[in-house]
Length: 342
Image (spheres, rainbow, N blue to C red):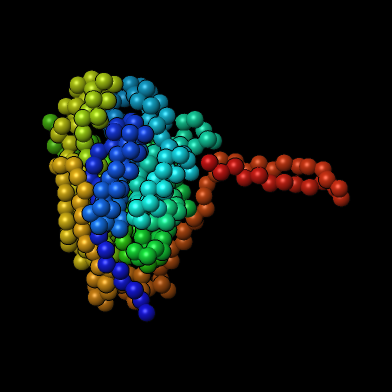
């Protein structure tokens, strides 16, 4: 018999303490406790919550942002690592599933970082570790491309959960790969703002509208709930940008459309929405609500032509080097293969 759990989710429409991973971690731990107290079984934090989103890449030439990049790399977290251990411990103590965006560093390089999302189970285990497949637009100046290793849906007591980061929610193949794994709850994460033009020019990218389109489309096509967590802009972000780039940097972001957090049902309609102010957004969801819409369009079931279409996904974790060392033992030469994993 199939179980369709019903429970409360929380989207953290909050700001990190910009470029301070430790302070942002403490804030996340406090919010995990708050969400649990208010009855949430799952909480989702925004894109790159630890230690913030590198919006400066859109505002100034790279020759002016070296120090910001150095600070950002220094505050990026290792997976696994001390920050992740504390998040896992908090999830276990509170019995809550946690999704959180991090800028991920590696011991294989002092300057290579990824835009990653972690899904942590209520038992404290790291259920999934996804690196954004392709950094978007100016993000290419900051993060490396990820791989398909984390392009997976995880079976949990709350149903089958998947996640994509920001612009990945525009990628039909990435979205379909999760749909085809029986995704029931999709998590979408976004930054506080995403400027593409000066505010006095027309045509600045409308982050709120793009989220509404993408989130609604995925929920409707997958017949799944979509939990969207966007970051909030705060004084720590503004102060850091002004100190590094001058007050004109603030003029550029003042006119940029802000992100929005929301929960969308399997019919594509929003159940709850929060923008403009910081806080936790709650919604009660019932996975059984996704059954009836599957009768209309089940794109991973009867409403497809698998004799015509075929999708193959490589989920190999990319590593920078595979080292093979020869050794001599009794009986002749032996080869020891050592795989270096970042």
